[in-house]
Structures are given as structure tokens and as C-alpha cells.
Length: 421
Image: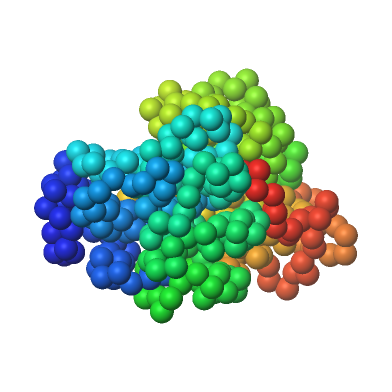
């Protein structure tokens, strides 16, 4: 199947050819026909499978047939995304798809001045890409109206729940046109996601490419069991073997990201850090430099896990294991994109055995051990088995017969702040 068989306009198909996009991915081939027929769509697919085009192409196709301009401050199609990076990525794709047409695509996100965004929305917008927090701000200022919005897309909806945006969604949804088409896309399907789908979708068509929680087949995964104090030395050693390749390093905290970036810079790496405390301009400049190859290493918190679409990221390091197991899948989905190969390397300290066990349970698979021996968890201490007075090497898995111990400081809690937007 190719794009002209999906019913897209010849102009849009020609534009895709200019962008060297010729063959639909599985999620696109399944979702686009239903979206073109006006059905609500519930799409389940891992990151890097082409979800943006799966909803973006039908939106551009349907909007292109509307001959009139949008009324002042109105929006015809709304796409909500949980992070600034993902929203920017979506808006760039929609502008690429609609290039040469009359469609106006606007982006509104937190971390940037609100006044230019208010000005941009005054004349009306065909397609608006927004983070929920900033959209609420604009609605409160009466800078935008949603009563003529007949198309709604919730992208990476599971992360919206993780970041506590459910209250924003409940405030936004009643403001949209009652007769509308809604598409919801997600990489995972937790229980609360099913409740969200039932509340916002009407008789949806469910399309699924990969089982929730499953990582891409071309990702070579491995785990090293290492003391927390030795993680930076191991990271420098491993990354020293591929200093010319792009690498993403995920850490748990903002201060940890800055601290690790400084260590890597002192060791000779071209590196930048992005997290929620960085301004939108700082985050965008770091990502652009990473995409262009001016920096080779990007240290990030989970705020960036779903907003970086750079095809040639060869290595993803989980320097700290995530508290939320699904986030592991989203993190490593930054590599092996568009059919390429990639490697995902995880570091597991003694107090992270619980996180590792949850991740493997979510994926329904053990991560191969590349170094060290799984920590034995007993009472309040975790240690490696001792052989001949030294920690053993190798190992063949983790979590067998182990009693889970929560990491110190809480662990396992889900973030509820919307500051990431």
C-alpha cells in the first residue's frame, strides 16, 4: 500500500514525495482510512512508528477542503501534547505536510512569552498544537475560542495522565464543538487510559501495532549492575567507545542532569542537558545542536523522552532507571527509529532492583545482563553475591526470588506537576 491508495489529495501525496515519505508505516496504514471516514480512532503504537503522520495527514487533508478562513480567535483542529518538545515536533510535521496550502498552523507552549502567542491566535487558526497548561492560560485570558473546534487529537495521552493533565483535559473538552472527531494516540494502555478513551471517544476504531509496553525489535537492550557511585565512570568508559555517535542519557532529576553533563564535559564530550528548569529557548537550542551533530551527547530528564525525533540516535543510556516502568519503553524508543538499529543500555544500582523488576514485568521480558551480577535484595540491604571475596561477574537475569525494596526517598510515585509543559 502507498499513500495515494489511502485517499489523500494528490497535492498532499506529492508533498509527501517531496519529503521522501513514500510508504505508510503500519500505524499509518491502519489509522488513516478510518480517520478519513470520520471515525474516532484509538491508536496504540510505540514511539518512532509514525503516529504523527497517522493523525496529521488526515487533519491536513480534511482542513484543505475548507474554503473559508477561520473566524477570529477560533481553532478548527486542536492537537494536545504533554511536552513542549513533542508539541514542537508535531507542529513542524504539520507545517511540512501543509506547505504550499492556505492552512495556518500555530504552536502554543509554556516556557515562552504568551503575548506573541496571543497575537498569533487573533486572526484564527486552522490547526493549533498546544500543551494543556498553556492552552488553559490562553483560554483564561479569552485569547482563543474552541467552540468551532471539530477535530481533537490527544497525542501521548498516557503521559498526559502521568503529568497530571487530566484536570486540564476535563476543563478543555466541554469547550469544543459537540459534533467533533477525536483521535487518541498512546504507547501504553493503563487502566486510567481506558477510562479516558471512554470519556472522550465515541464508538472508536482501535488500531494497535505493538502490544503496550513492547520495545522495538531492533533495539539491542542490556543492563549493567553497578554501584551508584560508579555509574559516571562506567558511562564515560562505554561512551568513549563511540564518541562520534549521538547518545541520549536519561537521568531522574534536574540537578542530576546538570551535574552529569558537567562531568561528561570535563571528560571531553560535547554535551548539553535539558530538563524542566531550562527555558524553552535553551531546550530548543540544545535539541537543534544535537540534531545537527554539534553536540554528541544529550542528558535529559523524562520531559524529553517523547519529544525528540532524531533518526540517528544510536545509543540510549538509562543512567537512572525510571520510577514509572512505561517510561523505560518511551526512553529507549528514541533509538532504532524509522527502521534503524540502536542500543539501549541500563544501569541498575542496588536500590533500583525494584524498578528493574517492574520494567521487565511491563515488557514481559528480561533485559540481558552485560556487566555485574544482579543484586540480592534482603531486608534493607542490597548486594551482589560474593565469589572468592569479590563481586561476581556475568549473570543471567534479575528478579528471580527477590523481594522488592523501594529506593530510598519514596520511589515509584508518579509525577503530578504540569510544569513540564
